[in-house]
Image (cartoon, rainbow, N blue to C red):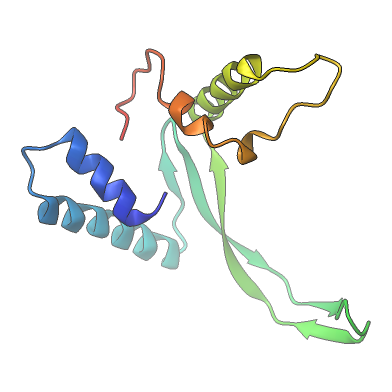
Amino acid sequence: MTKSQLIERIVEKAPHVPPRRIEAIVNAVFERMTQALKAGERIELRGFGCFAVKSRPARLARNPKTGAPVALKQRVAVSFAPGKELRERINRARSRLQDDLPGPAHLPRMSVLRVPALASHLGSGSEVAPRI
């Protein structure tokens, strides 16, 4: 999902709010999250997950094509750890999707990431959290 798709989904859920206002709110949320991560803060969204900044140490790597050593500098990366509720919702959707797939049980199932129908299963059920 892209940011514009997210904004469109919120507009569908809140038709009384002007789309420009929703876009400004989404941009403000992302900007504040960026500022917090720049400051080294951890962002915890209950039921969704946690964003944190992790430092990757400098190391010596190899060019896979030539095998020549390449020095990599220390760098910073943003990590995301999904929350318990998000993991459970995705696992429920995945199990429902796999139950719907045809085929013998002894054959490996298709990867959920390659099945476009997953999106239709993700928000179904009686969740407590609002869906966007």
